[in-house]
Structures are given as structure tokens and as C-alpha cells.
Image 1 (cartoon, rainbow, N blue to C red):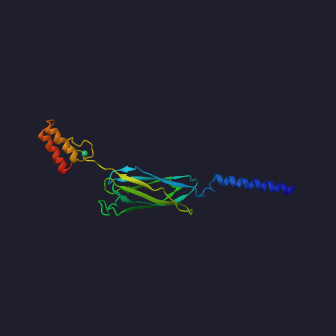
Image 2 (cartoon, rainbow, N blue to C red):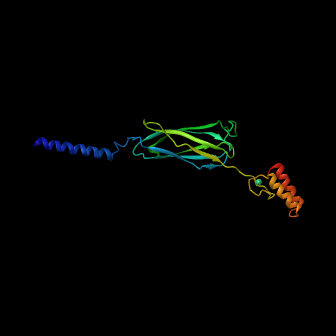
Image 3 (cartoon, protein in one colour):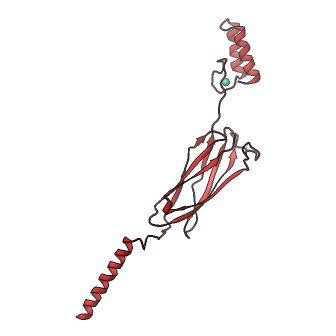
Length: 198
Ligand SMILES: [Ca+2]
């Protein structure tokens, strides 16, 4: 009878120890391996600008830490050709970020990427993260695009608003002038924009 009572007391003590352990965070350092991370940023940015990329952790609890290696590279122009290495701003073909996110400092980290000064290109982010000693996981592959700043044609002859006076738009203005719908001066402006660009 006495032995049974002792067993009961021991069980109660073990349960109390576990509850106290949970309360004071003794079991909180467990990294389960089901934690994930993603990156967020504006998908279209100005050429030559600094872009903030935010890395966010999901599914983590207690104490944890994760290492990150992320790359912005493989920049291509609108024809799909790789962008030359030599660009304004010291672009070397790749930007690599290495950092660590620790639970005590929050679940997000922001990194700044200096985007190459090249309009209308698409670059690709690819990288991975590793929580504690768990296996490395890959980020989803994502792209970022630089804006094309379209010049404005002051003559008003750029009917499709692509920043270029093409020969058909010039031809339309010639017809307008022939028909007396515009002046020779105005036709001169359109010719100059066709020759020199807007
Ligand atoms: Ca045009």
C-alpha cells in the first residue's frame, strides 16, 4: 500500500516538473524542422535603386536561430540576354547576402539590395535557409524587375505612347501636314523626334 502511494507521489512530482519546465521555457529550444521562411519585396523597382527585402519566419516557436544565404543574380534584358557585368554602381553579376535570424530579435529581418542601374531587366533571387542543425531548405525562386522609364514625346505624335516616334507615326504626321491638318513647324518637331529620339 505504501509503495503504491510513493509511485503516485513520484508521478505527480514528474508531472509538476514537466509543467514547471514548460512554464519557464526549459523545453522551448526545440527546432522542429517544420519552420519555413519566405522573402517579400516589391516586384517592380527603379533601376539603380535600393530595395528592401524582408525575410519572414513562420511556424517557429520558442528559441530558434536560422542561417540564410540568398543571391540576386542572373539579370537578363528584355530579350533574355544576360546583362553585362560592368554596370554603373559596381554590379559584379551577383549580390550575395549571408545573415542569421535569431528568435530573440524577432521573426523578420530586412536586407537592402542595391539594384543594378539598368532599365527593363529581370533578375532572379535564389537561396536557402537552415534552422539550427536541420536540413537546408530552398527559398522559392523569385524574380525582380526594373522599370522602363519611357521618354515623353513632346510633339504629341507618339500615338502608341512607347516613347518612340516610329516611321508610321511620322508618316501619319506627314499626311496630316499634306492635308492641312497641322503646320510645317509641327511636322518639323515630329521629324526631329523621329531622328533624335524623344
Ligand atoms: Ca510610338
